[in-house]
Length: 238
Image 1 (cartoon, one colour):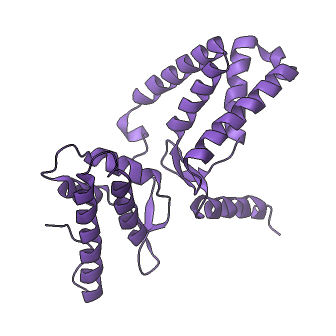
Image 2 (spheres, helix red, strand yellow; image 1 turned 90 degrees about the horizontal axis):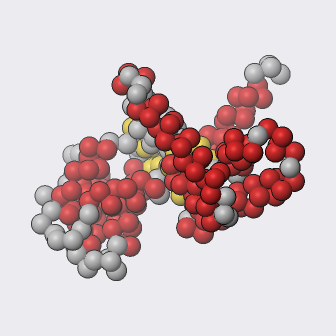
Image 3 (cartoon, rainbow, N blue to C red; image 1 turned 180 degrees about the horizontal axis):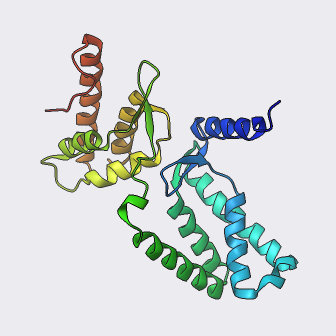
């Protein structure tokens, strides 16, 4: 066996885990999608405590117990929200870490954690545009099994047109909630299904979302029909 075999196998396993249905996944800032694990949350919370209490706190059983408890709380929050799996942005995880620290009465640790996040955000914002990763986090799997970047322009067009002329509906909300339920390698047809399901869940909030749902469903059916005829891979409702 080659010495590089183990890392390559590990990466392959991670890629498979990140795209498996029913799993929680994390969108990193560089756009990649990885499996959700407790380990990085534990490390982040531990570092937050050590930054306030010093390196000697690393051996404290109180710190270890507190970190374990807070990590479990953060993980439980996401598992409760998405029992069937889903995609979480790294910022959402950090928001929950911050909230867990405050609820636990660890105000000083939480405050330092907020300051740390702000400083890192300013550091990222100050980088030259060419240093920032522009790739979209998701690739879609086409009917022939090949991959292609998720076309955000088309996604935006479909949702915007589906919401056109309807009061009290939010196209951005539909897109944001849909993206939370996608993952790298998702089938194109499942992207369309996710749009429809997202709009449908918003009907209780605003009845006009029922019209949005119908338009999105019509777009899906039309795209399937045109694809079957070999005319086009996509269509909008107009």
